[in-house]
Every structure is written in C-alpha cells, then in structure tokens.
Image 1: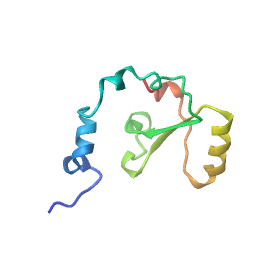
Image 2: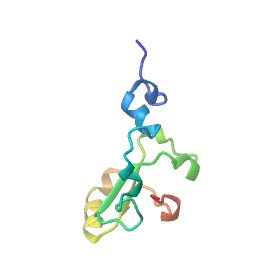
Image 3: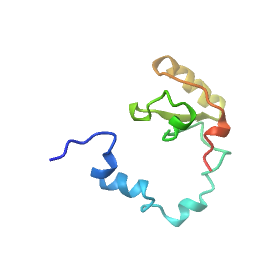
Length: 98
C-alpha cells in the first residue's frame, strides 16, 4: 500500500476528498444562519488552510487552526490554554467566514 502523508491525504481518505470537493454539503449549508461574522458561540475554531497567503513562513500542514473569540467566557477559556499553544494575532478581515 501507499504511505499516507498530510500532503496528499485527500487522495486516500474518501470523506476528506468529498468534503474538499464540496460533494457532502447540503443545501442548508449555504443558507446557514450561523455561518456569518456575528457568531453566537464563545469561540469559533477551524482549519486555517489559507495561512500561507497571510504568512508564507507558516506551514499549514504542521497543524494550524484559526480561532475567533467572541465572548468574555471564550476569552477566559482561551487565556487558560494560551501558554500551551503557539499563537499569532491576525486581522479578522483576513479570516472572514463568509
């Protein structure tokens, strides 16, 4: 068999290939009232696939996530783990959800 790597993971994992090709999206995904800048969650976390466009020195395959803190509770939670992670502040306009 083929040895899997992060670089070509989508070639070997059917769900990842389908997700990246937008084959598993439902019509409701495009109308979701929660997929907007005005979040109701304390923190939003997502993969940061476009980090290289913002900072070419960061390798997205090393495990880069994007997070947005939207409440005081989220801020307190983030502070409680902030010493355990490597973080960088990026302008929200560069990571918009919509």
